[in-house]
Length: 91
Image 1 (cartoon, rainbow, N blue to C red):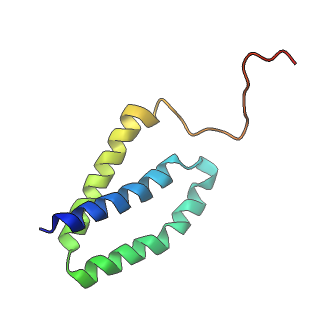
Image 2 (image 1 turned 90 degrees about the vertical axis):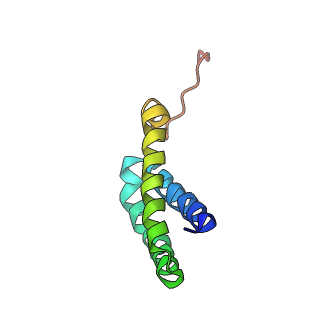
């Protein structure tokens, strides 16, 4: 098993899942559509290099890491809205 490739794929998959996870609910469909190209490129990379096993393991680890982030941090800190609240001003 190639650990450098596994690490690289974990980082790419984690970033992609994290962006999708932290996008607002109304923009998730657009983000999902924009993730198609990088996903196809990663699939082509894994198939051409013969690292399909590393790609599947990296995807599972990335899903686990993003789930842990969501469970520990993301659930209590939801995605911000467009409105900005300023505390302490009496205007």
